[in-house]
Image (cartoon, rainbow, N blue to C red; front, side, top):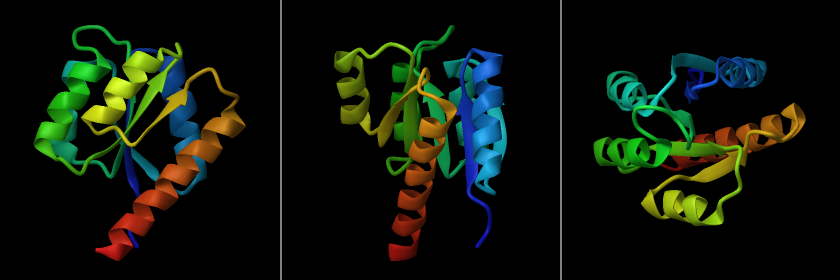
Length: 130
């Protein structure tokens, strides 16, 4: 099976670096990164990653608006939202739009690894069921 392709979207370079390291430790690949919601939508349309990890709070276009546009491109997109603030209202909105999960960015790296790996396994199970 080909490597699972991720896109990482966050306005903080240090978070993108951390997430890239975690993803690569799973033998998956990061095919692109974006630092705002506008870039995220354009790069999603271009690359169609298997899994997108996307921050909620970003400049130009926030993650909620970008999520809506990505889901319009592909209603089955696997998008996992990232947040440093635990606003359940925003999280519920993202889940209702179609996000598969959300991660707290301030979790320790091993917790992020566990959650990303779980999402990766979920993705592999979904495509093998098709």
